Image (cartoon, rainbow, N blue to C red):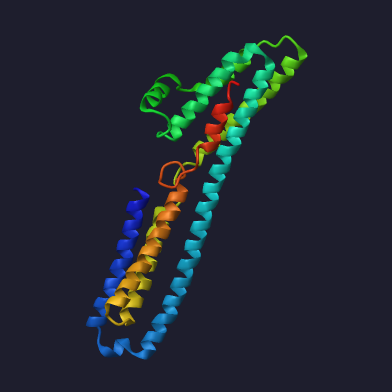
Length: 254
């Protein structure tokens, strides 16, 4: 389910609660809408509203933290890729094939994670010819035969950095799943529907009140949309930038 669809469902629940409140106001006997009743309802809804605000705040903070962690992971990955390329450049011309394979693996990651990167032809070529490119980097690194102490040291350092890059890539992949629980969002939508029903239950029935409640419902729904978008940093409208890897790609092979 997309972020937009989920936020639309949340808006529908809240809007439905608002309409339910107006309907109950018209159907309930007068003594159910007395001042004492209103005070009790306000106390109860204040509790639910406070809990909802706390939960929404935690969801936004958690999603933003996850999004920032993914962005930092991409930046660190790009830095390690450039460092590995420089180690291989210092190794000598014998590492040229490894450097080319490293560049292919970065292009492959860009095309697979950000499909809009590059032309359709280059994406097709990447999908056909660069499957498992980064595993090939390890194979070619291990196949290098250093002849000097400097080359032995550079090969050991390159293998260490290559291992770090592989770990970073798998960490990014493992964290791509949706971390926001759907039952949690359903519960939040129900809470907000109840709160808005209480608003419209005691509010006067006029266009100003109705418009205000609709705008508030849109704000809550847009908050849910923001949470879901931040929780899917590689798939939605709000995405982690590929600029670090693009910059790294321009430096590889130099």
